[in-house]
Image 1: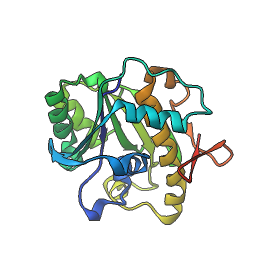
Image 2: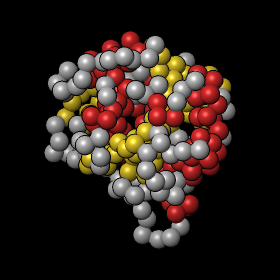
Image 3: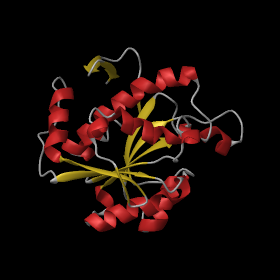
Length: 225
C-alpha cells in the first residue's frame, strides 16, 4: 500500500521545463492536481487528499481497464514536492514520512530516468539508484533504497555532460512525446494508489507509450494506455 507520493524536481522558474523536473510535470498532469491545497511544509510543498477522492478518480479513468477492487486504503494520501533541490530531496520526503509515521515501503517516488528512453514509463520497487541524486538522497536519509519508483524516461544524451542534459529543457519535439507519457503516468499512479502495485510490475516494468496504443480520454486529454 502506498501512502506518500514524492515528486522530485528543482524549485524555481529556471528549472520548470528541465528534464530533471519530469516528476513535477507528472504531478501537474494529475486530474485532481488543481484541487490539491498545497502548503509550505516539510521542506517542500505538501498536500493531502482523502482516499475517496482518489478512488473516484480511479473509477472515472479506469472504467475500461481491468483493475483490482480498492482494498484497505489509507484514510488520506500524502503528496510532497521537495523544494530542497534535487540532491537533498530525501530530507523533505523523510520529514513528511516521519511526521505521518509512513514506512519506507509505503512511499512512491516519481522521477526522471536516464536509463530508459523518452516515451517510456517504468514502475519499480527498490533496486539501484542509477546515479540519480534524488534517489541517492532518499537512500542516505532512510538508510535503504526499498521504496517504490515511478520512472519517466528521458534517455541518455550523445555526450558526457549528464548534468547539463538533465538541467536543460525538453525541446518542443520532446514535449510532444512527453505529454501523452505524463497522462499515461497519471493514470498509472492512480491505479498504483488504489490497487496493488505489485500486480502492475510485470506490465509496467518498462512500457513504451506509443501512438498505436489504445487511447482513453481523460477530461479532454488523450491518455495512451
